Length: 453
Ligand code: GDP
Image (tube, rainbow, N blue to C red; front, side, top):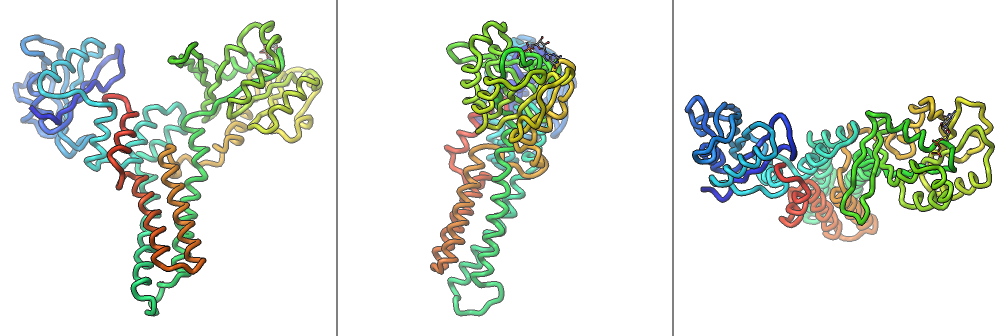
């Protein structure tokens, strides 16, 4: 019985066509042999990798189900270890019973993210690739998925490896120069080091500059829809939450369950908190009016300020405009299907879109405006986009260390002093990709995964 064999249900809770129980570790196939009995009578441990067998799953004498077992042999598996995936009929109780049988026969329950952690420890993935797996699972928009997919393909790792190469070359040259300062070796001069460092700095700054837009694409953007009663906020909501575009999620764990509605506008997920306020009766909206708008504005990253195009701007409209002037705001002139009394010119300094929420006109323009204002329009999701705060911090610390190295060079400090800063920058990058990361950090990262991943 091996301590290191882990098992978990790999499919979501609930009913499905199939459910999968995953077993991994040295001895995983032997554990599977005790619960899975192929009709061919050939035990799974006699199969080579990437083979499937059909058979019975049993808990001792008790028949549980018929199913398929897929065998992976180390190192050619997700975790890099021997792995068996048993597919059974996808009932919640069924998969739990099969898992229980597997646990009785020598596996221990996997911790959250333990399969991916093992893949990382067995060098099947680096840390940025492992983190991208989380992004793949949680992606809600095509662009978000593309960013995580890129990271899984190693886009971040490759970019960082290029920068590392530059820095290692600089560190080596600096060390050589410190040892033989009087030798006149071509390329070994402070001016050349500075060039190398500046180039690494530029690359990192480029990566850092796309972080916020990447975050918008991955996670969406908290958005408030504000405007006076009857300007068409609910109608706009209905237009945005056309069946395919809307998902309503209950966010539990708060004193009162908040309903967060998400709508996808082009490539971007808008998180519309407190839409209940918008959908309530006009009387209520009337009574809360501008005051409610203020509260919502504060907690949102983006404001959609809606105005009734058929009416001239009122005092309240101007108040609303004034309260959002420092925010990311898109002015929406609604009801363009009717004769309008206001136009884009009335909102000169604002990004303005004309729509008819009722007719569904102007959706494309709104998509463009959201992409533009969130910075997502300028982002190529195919580029190396940092995935989370941990990666951003490592990249930022590396950039600071490089800036210090450049400052030390320019101030004519000793090459040793410059070298220390370059080493520091390198350490930060090794931390970013996980080549040099503490167990605590790795544990913390994988804890955020779900069990079975
Ligand atoms: P809210 O109070 O801001 O949520 O406004 P509603 O969405 O309830 O709309 C108020 C009224 O304006 C309703 O009668 C809607 O049918 C109408 N309305 C909303 N959008 C449009 C539009 O684009 N064109 C026209 N003609 N009427 C609209």
